[in-house]
Image (tube, rainbow, N blue to C red; front, top):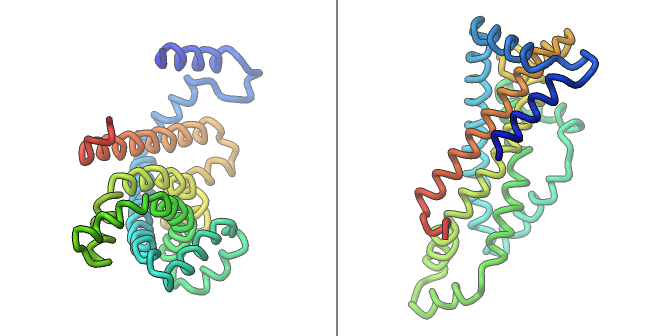
Length: 236
C-alpha cells in the first residue's frame, strides 16, 4: 500500500504543475550531479558529525538535570530550562556569538540550546508520570534514596529515554540547516542548501531536501530498531 501511494504521488508530481516546480526526473538528475562532484558526501558528513556531537552533549545535560530534578534545589532549574523552549534563536544569536570563540562552537551551542529544552520537557514528563508505588517498593526493599533513583528512573526508564532521543533527533536535524547558515565557511548540507537556494537552483534544492528527509527517516528507523533490540518488552 505504501509503495502504491508513493508511486501515485510521484506520478501526480510528474504530470501536474505548470513547469515552475521541477519534475522528479530533473530532481534525480540534480542528485546524480551532486554525487559525482563529491560536494554532497563531504557536506553531509560535516552536518552529521555536528548533529551527533550536539545530541551527545544535549543527552548528557538533559539526563543529569532530569535525574537531579527529584531534588528540590535542581527541580526549579530543570523547570526553568523547560520554559526556555519558548525562546527564539533569532534574538540570541548575537549573545552566543560573543560567548563563543569561533563559528564551530557557535553552531554547536545554538544546536544544544535548541535541543535541551525540548529534551528536558519530554524527560520530566516521564519522571512525573512514575507511580508513587515504584518508589515505595524500593523503600520497602531497604534501598536508599540514591538507589531508588537509580532503579526507578535510571534503569526503569532507560527505554523511554531512547525514545525521547529518537523524537528529539528530528528537532536537531531540522535545525542543522539554520545554524549552518550562520557560518558557511565550514560547509555542511545547510550551507549547500542556502547556496543553491540563493541562485534559485530549485532542482538542487529539492534534491538536497530529499537527502535530508531520507537521512532523517533512516536515523528514526535505526533508533527505533535499537530500542526494540535493547528493550524487547517495548514491543509487547
